[in-house]
Image (cartoon, rainbow, N blue to C red):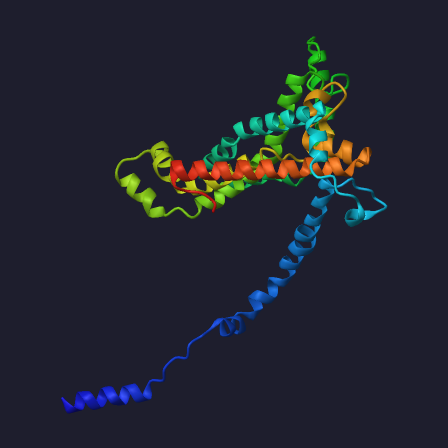
Amino acid sequence: MTTEVTTEVHLSRTIPTLPKRGAGSYLYRQWPLYFMMIVPMAFFIVFRYIPMGGVLVAFKDYNIFKGIWASPWVGFDVFKEIFGLPEFYKALRNTLMLNFLGLLTFPIPIVLALMLNEIRVHWFKRVSQTLMYLPHFISWVIVGGIAIELLSTNYGTFNQMLNSLGISSIPFLEKPILWIATYVGTGVWHSAGWGMILYLAALTGINKELYEAAEIDGAARMRKMWHVTLPGIKPTIIVLLILQIGNMANIGFEQPYVLTNNYVTDYSQVISTYVYTVGIQSARFAIATAVGLFQSVVGLILLLTAELLSRKINNQGIF
């Protein structure tokens, strides 16, 4: 008994107590990580947060010579003006319509990822993957030029082939319905491969033992895909779907701008091109800023709504 007590006293004297490590000690040990964070933080502060002061232009009678601070306040008069413009509602309608049609193509990258995941010939899988995500790195100016060269009514390659077969030309870029189909199709061709890469990355995190257990239970390839693969990438699908719904009010400038023409202006004029036309070409900067602010607020509302619905239905979200 005495020996045991002596041993415990001896151990308590020889083993030092670890000092409490506070935030300062943690910062000292991890300083390389925080040092590397300085550049991206500076980028976001300089190019994302400081320019938010320009939102004040939407509430002022902005004069480029007086500057933002010296221009007189007008409150919400600029918003009342844009809400009275029929062109604004047309641009908003076209933006929501084109983004909704793009949302309907959301499953295409998932299907491509599932198909590639089932390919067992590795060289064919690598070549197919490269060819499908390569268009993502092509500028929309080039994509628009390719679309015009292929689908133009008078000299497009596709219509010339139809004419050689005795078939009349199809006005892909002149009739509104065909133009919308062309817009959605070029968008899928340009971005589906990149979305596929995200899902392929998510597929690598699925436990291989689940496939083995399903195979032991007699599950065929389609059963394994439905009961193992899709549940495994479900969190990624939900996050990307919520983000895409949140961007319903936002639309890129390049694609509608390079594909538009005088025949389809009523359907190709979206918020981004409207801001360019009104704000840059007509120098009405207050209206352009107000439209951009309205677009951001609507996008935030859609994002939070999609997050709330996802939490209610699947108990998953991005926050």
